[in-house]
Image (cartoon, rainbow, N blue to C red; front, side, top):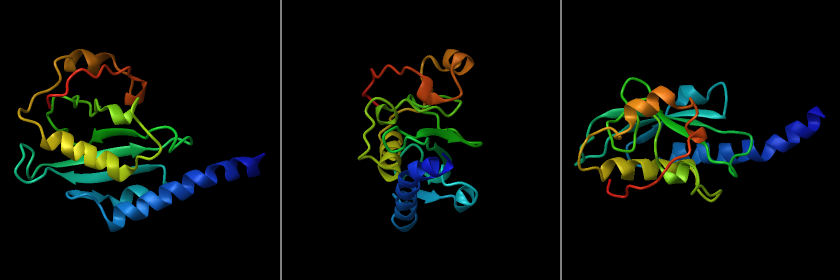
Length: 159
């Protein structure tokens, strides 16, 4: 039975290794893999991010936490901001949860860590006003620790 589990995880490990190498060799602008985060496990990464030049977040530093389940890439990774600086943005809750459709219902196995990073950079870069989502206080008090367990309602394409 242990052999089956090992064989079943091989495609996951191979895919994550491929994406890890791609992120290291050709990261999106302003993104860097935190090498320490992958020393003990390949299923949890931290990506250091810097706000893009000419945006509201220019020069600010953030961290994204990626957690991969055994069903990746058929199941999206859990992605959230972590650390001391969570961006103030209409689609980012103060606990780091991100309301972005590709992280849940619009996920496709064709997407990658790089494409998720690009989407998050784009989301932040297009923002015109730093503010929290209107339901931030209620959501943070009542949500699950795993943002993938939230039933998101995607209704705002203005930011």
